[in-house]
Every structure is written in C-alpha cells, then in structure tokens.
Image (cartoon, rainbow, N blue to C red; front, side):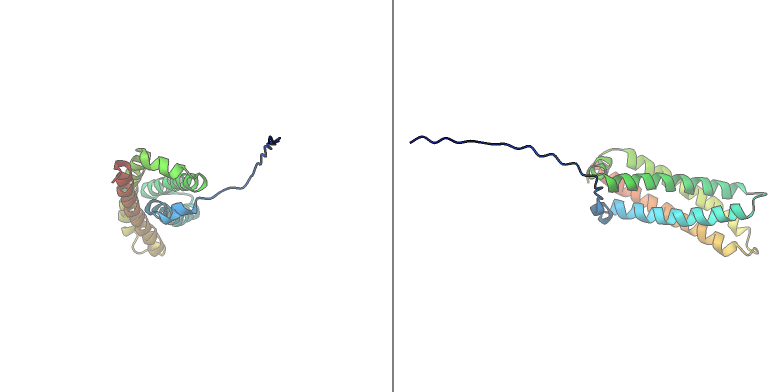
Amino acid sequence: MSHSVTIRTQTVTSSSTAVIINTGYLKTWGGLLKLFELALGIVCVTIIANRIGTYQHYAYTAELFFLLMTTTFLVGTFILLLSCLISLSTSSIFAKTIYELLYHSIAFGLYLAASLTFVVHVSNLKGYREYDVLMAAAVCGLVNAALYLFSTIVALRSYRGI
C-alpha cells in the first residue's frame, strides 16, 4: 500500500535585542581581580581628583603621576571587564593571548611606581589635614598594584595553559 506524505517546512527567524551578561566570568579569579581593581581604582581616582580639584592653583608632580596612572588603568580595566562580561567568548579568547599578560604586568609596574612616589610625597605632608585621606589613597594604590601582580600571575598561568 502506498501513502502520500506531505512535508512542510517552516523557517522562523527571530531577532532579540536582549543583552546576555556573562556573570560566570565574575566567578573566576581573573574576573574577581578585575572587579576589585576597578573598585580600588575608582576610590583612588576619586580621592586624588578631589585633592587636585580643591587646590587648582598648583599640583605636585607625584599627585599628577598618581592621577594619570590610576585613571589610565581604571579605564583600561573597565573596558576589559566590560568586554568579558558582554561577550561570552571574549574571556576565553583573552586568556589565550599575551595581551592580558602584558597589560597586567605593565599596570603592576606603573601602579607600583606611582603609588610609591605618592607615598613618599604624602609622607612629607604629615602635618596637613588631608594627610589621612591621601595616605589612604596611596595605600589603596599599593593594594591595587598587588592585585595587578596577582592578575599578571593568573594571566601567565592561563597563557601557558597551566
């Protein structure tokens, strides 16, 4: 007995404007370190920008160097973190390139230099009323330099596949 079979195919396309956020990245060491680096960077930039904004007629070289380095790596880390959160494949691709290793190692060196320079500068301001706040910013800078060192180690291990 023969049967007649009719096959109908239907193509359905859908477009979604939903943004998928890769929250799993924040559960990794790299994601957590970037989040903490970003938070401490915001604290450092806020404190030193307020200091320079209050005393507009002069600014010391150490303060400007610290502001420049904290702002530079705040923006860079924000872009890295945002790209890893928005794209599902970016975090795995970055781990296989040397970019993160270079970025974090340069950030560590420059952040350490800027923070140590700023600590020396602030220690000369011991009698001033802003001393405690400025020393807190300098210590946050040193902690952030340590976080960038840990990020360099994580990036090195990821790059080598360890």
